[in-house]
Every structure is written in C-alpha cells, then in structure tokens.
Length: 148
Image (tube, rainbow, N blue to C red; front, side):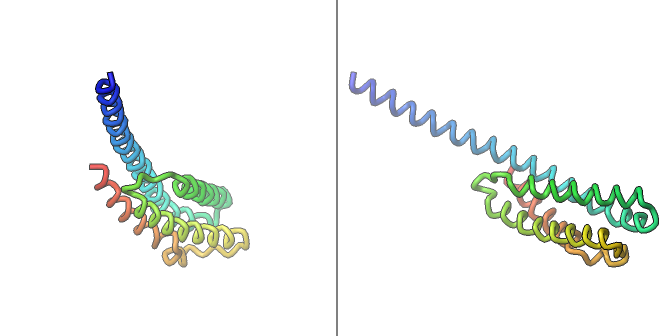
C-alpha cells in the first residue's frame, strides 16, 4: 500500500509539473499576442497622428479626434504596462514599459500644447512618442521570437 501511495504521489507531482509547463506556454502565447496587438496599435498611432496634427491646426473636429487618439494611446500604454509578463519575457516587457513611459510623456506634452493652443505639427517629428515607438516595435519583435 505504501508503494502505491508513493507511486501515486510521484505521478501527481509529475502531472502537476507538466501542467505548469503547459500553463507557461499558454501564458507566453497569450502575452506574445497582446504584445503584437500593442505593437500594431503603436504603429497605427504613429502613422495617423502626424497627419491629424497637421489637419488639427485648422480644424476643430480633427483637433478633437487628435486629442481622442492621444488619450486612447495613453490608455493602451497603461493597459499594456499593467500586463503580467511570463518570466521568459519579463526583461523585454520592462523595456517596453520604459519606452512606453517615454511615449506617454510625449503624449502628455502634446496634449498640453493642444490645451495651450501651441500645437506645431512641424515639431512633431522630434517628439518622444515617435522615437520610442520604434524601440517598442523592435523589442516586440524579440518577444515574437519567444513565441516561436
């Protein structure tokens, strides 16, 4: 009876260990998908905002649309930053969070310029939003490699 109990305990430990590995794989796949979606959102944001900013100088409706896009991106940054990354991607996630924080600061700066009536589309190219977005996309490419 004692041998059966030991064998059953050993089987349970092996099974639970296998579940943990399966859970890690699932968490990694879920995280890679979230990171890819985030990269796509960043990419869309970066491609749309300069044009919107140029148009927003002379169009109040476009200005409101620009403000909405900026606020939505801030929310996306917050949501992604709060994700729990799997251990294998933890360092990369932290790098994305740091780059995203720089983007958020650039967004806040841009929102303040809009609020103060000092929106200058010519200066948009130097804003941290766009510089850090390339860093985010590069890091997410590394994360995608983890999922393969």
